[in-house]
Structures are given as C-alpha cells and as structure tokens.
Length: 567
Ligand code: C2E
Ligand code: MG
Ligand code: MG
Image 1 (cartoon, helix red, strand yellow):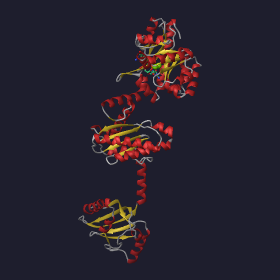
Image 2 (image 1 turned 90 degrees about the horizontal axis):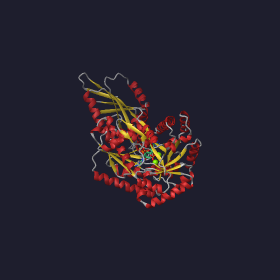
Image 3 (image 1 turned 180 degrees about the vertical axis):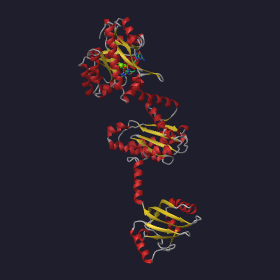
Image 4 (image 1 turned 90 degrees about the vertical axis):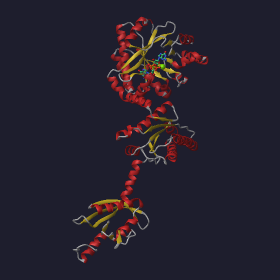
C-alpha cells in the first residue's frame, strides 16, 4: 500500500490485505492525480482493471455509457466542493461483457485549506438487489396479462408529468364475451387489443390497461386531430381483423373519450381530473351508443355532476324528504270510472329541481339504493291507502312499480308483509308493476317470487309491454294479472295499422289467458277510441289525468266517485 504516514508494518499490511480478500466487497484508494489502487483480488478480478496500479479513467471506461456522465459529475463535485461522504450506484462492465450494478461508498479527505487529499471507499455488487427492484417495479407498474402499463403507472405519470391529452377506451359488451366464450378467449381479445394500441400509439405516447376492459393513452406532446383520428381508425380496423382471426364471430365496439390539458390539471389534485374527464366522456358516448371519440366538454361536466350527485345523494335526499309519491288514475273502459291508480315517485331537489324517475331509478338500481327507495314507496302507498280507507269511502287498489333488484332482495318480502300489517291492509289493496326485462331474465325464479306475492293477494302487472323486450312467452309462462301496454306502442298504433292488428291479436290472447289489459299513455280521444275498439280493459294517460300528489289525487277520486268501481 502506498499509504500516507504508514503506521503499519509489512506483515500487518499483508494481514489486512488478506482480510480484504476474504470480504465480499472491493476496497479502493484514490489519489489526487487519479491513480487508483484496488484491494480484494477476488472482487476486482472480474473487471478489466490493473488491480495494483489502476486509474480513475480506467474504471470510468468500464462504466455503462448512460451512467458515466453522472459518475464523473459526482467525482468532481466531491473533490472540488469538499464533500466527505458519498454513496452512488452505477453499472460496470465485467470481463464477460455483462454490466453489473455497483454500489460505491466513499470517504474523501481534505486538508485545512479544503484541498482534496485522498479518497477511500468500497464497491459492492448490488445486481441481485437491482434486479429484484426492477422486477418489483415491473410488477407494480405493469399489467400482467397484456404487458401494458397499469393504472398505478397512469396515476404516477399524470401526477409527475404534463400531458397534452388523454384518451380513454372501453371495449363495449366485453363482459358478454367473457361469459359466452370463457376467460381464455376473452384474454386473447384483450392481448390482441393491447398490442394493436401499442403498434399505433407507443411512438407518440404511453398505453395503459386501466381496468378489465378499459384502456388509456397519454399523449405528452400535441398530436393533430387528423392524425389521431386516422390512428384510431386504424386501431378499429386492425381490431376488427384480429377478432376475425380469433374466429369467435364476436363484434366489439370501442367507446372512446378524450380530455385535453387545461389549467384545472395544473395542481397535484387536479392532475387526476384528466383521467376522470376522459372516462366521463367515454361513458357519455357509450351510453348514447356513439362509436367515435367524444371530447370532454361543459355538457358532459354538467351531466356527470348530476349523475354523481344522484349516485351519492339518494339516501340523504330520502332523509330530507325530497322524495314523494304521485298517483295517476287508471280508468275502466266504458264506465270511465277510476278503477285503480299507479303510484309514481318524484324527486324534488333544491339545486337540481325535479329529477325524473327515468333518470334516478336506473342510478338507484346501480347503487342498490333502490331497496330503500322501494321501501319508501311501499310505506307511502300503504299509508295513502289507509288514509283513504279511513277518511273516504274510496276503496281502490294502488299499483307500485317494483324494480328487479327489490323483487329478488331477500328482505323485500318481509318488508311488504310488515307494511301491510302496519297499516292493517290486505294484499289485494296493492298491485305490483314489474317491467318485462326482469321477467324475461329469470323466468323460473321470477315465477317462484311472483307466486309468493300472489299468495298474499297482491296482483301483478307486467309493465311496459312492447317497449323493446317484448316476449309473448313471458305472458304465457308467468302468472300475471295485468299486462300494461307501453305508451310508445300505443302512440305508434295510431299511425300504423299493422301495429293495431298486432295489438288486437295480443289483447285477444291476453283475454283468453284471463289477463286484463291496461293501455298506457292515452293522450287523445283518438288514442282512447282506438284502444277501446281493441277491447282494452283499462286506460291510463294524460287524457284522463296526470300523476298527482296524494291530496289532489284524493280530491280527484272523490269528484269522480271512485267507490262505484273496483278491480
Ligand atoms: P311506468 O311505470 O311505465 O310509468 C308510466 C310513465 O308514463 C310515468 O312516467 C307517467 O308519468 C307517464 N305517463 C302517464 N301517462 C302518460 C301520457 O299520457 N303520455 C306520456 N307521454 N306519458 C305518460 P314517470 O312518472 O316519469 O315514470 C317513469 C318510469 O319510472 C315509470 O314508468 C317506472 O318504470 C319508473 N318509476 C316511477 N316511479 C317508480 C317507483 O316508485 N319505483 C320504481 N322502481 N320505478 C318507478
Ligand atoms: Mg308502471
Ligand atoms: Mg309503463
């Protein structure tokens, strides 16, 4: 050892060298002139250096080109700026030509004037640790199925990097592919789509798999709309071909939403908005069946705000009594007396005004708050019936719309039993209206559930017949009491004589099966005459009365002396 003021004997030095050789680390000593001496032959024999008389340059030459500049910067920074301790990591080429990861720790010594005197330190091979880290990183930020970046990486990039725009893509009806063709086939579809996205977008951006069938693309720099459009066109075309090659005969639409960078995305919290915006735009387009790229805009913002409000606000609104029931009379053919009423729910909110059931019922079904809303409907309707029985001589049943989720919820039956007993009512005071989509879905189970309610005396109506799910089979198989013909079909019937013929046959069939027919959406005398001609049993619509609050409905009934009729 060419050491300063060496206090050791030769023998002691030899012992020290043997100790170094036995260790797993390499040790080094560097002088101001750049000469380097390495200790621990076992460690350094793997590298092309002159162990006893090397130089900083010789070591530097072995360093990976990508790490070399930062290595040199570190060394000059330390020696010039008087930094005493340091740790750094870089890659060095070994004799086999492979790069290994080295961790270098060192201590530099300076004289009183701050002049660099010498530096000593250690080298250790941290390749295994680095590889494990890389593997963990890969697992943490990549999707295993497609090899694309995953959602965690998307979030990271959104937070730490600025992007001009983001695309959010959804494979529509993918879940049915899973159900119909099985997971393996569905996975092949996902892999095919992922590799097509990579082909067309990895040069201009990063591609992510965000969810089962949802993908995102981040584009850091501006891409012309025309180019984007053509790339997306190619993706669609290639995907169509890939599906054809997979031989499944399946058709999948791609819904795409796009969000552009704005000042709202500047902050850390705001940076993730881009993801929400692109997704909301995609969902907006998906719901409307658009197959082109939808740009996030003010209208989508308003719409999304409203949906989010509904998704989170229903239970609160129930507590604040924002919901109430309205009642629409249903009259008998001929006598035109009110035979029953349909209860229809209303939501009146201070900020959003009236929210229509067609808007909030699907949201309540999605969030399952329909169970609580349904309970509210049952309770309100039973209370209204009780009041009418107590204070008037009106005794007509009121129908309640029941969603599929309620019907198959285990607590629903008991809730109905309790409500009937709370208001001392029997089952024949109420009617359940069920839409046909439910009946279609689960025939065997539906029959069982419906029979249970019918055993309580509750009559069952099939709602919205002809609204798109029409199935004569459900009329024949499921024990309904009433069929309600959807208003859309009634409106079409006035214009189309073929529909009228079909309706006539339908009513005949219903009657022969002992079912009563209610025609909905009667708005004009003409409509009224037409369904009367076809022998409908009951009529409902604005022509007679609009849905009314309980007190108003009660007055209406008294004026129209409802007690003379019953179902
Ligand atoms: P639905 O059960 O088919 O109810 C009939 C709808 O037609 C009601 O709309 C009613 O106001 C409307 N209507 C009645 N007469 C006419 C007419 O002459 N012309 C036109 N154009 N429309 C007429 P509403 O009240 O907006 O309810 C929409 C749907 O929301 C209902 O359709 C029902 O499926 C659902 N819904 C309403 N209340 C409830 C509820 O308490 N629970 C559940 N699960 N669903 C409900
Ligand atoms: Mg109904
Ligand atoms: Mg209906």
